Length: 107
Image (cartoon, rainbow, N blue to C red; front, side, top):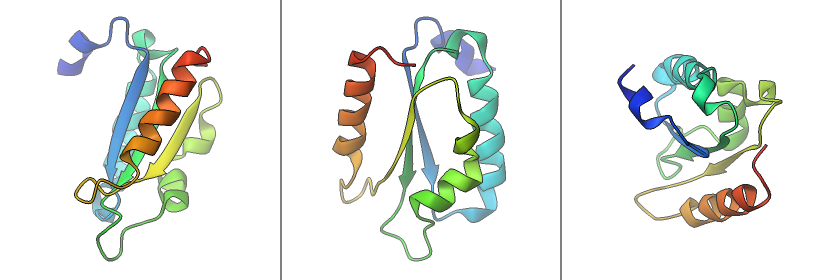
């Protein structure tokens, strides 16, 4: 895919999911896991933002974890944070986690 030109030397993946769009979660999961299978991304740390938490009906981080099957990720560090980009909530907490994960050596 088009994104492969950005893969070399990637140390982290930030994956943003629209927590309010349950119809597209299957597609989001498929795309997410296809990215994780890329050879050049094998060692990358993963930060998932469960975004749009400000909207009614948005799934929480536990539901997004289940939908994306994050529990199946065993070979790398990952974390999920509830966010609202509009309100600026959860964004810095996720980036702080990512910074610490990269400092500690990733996977």
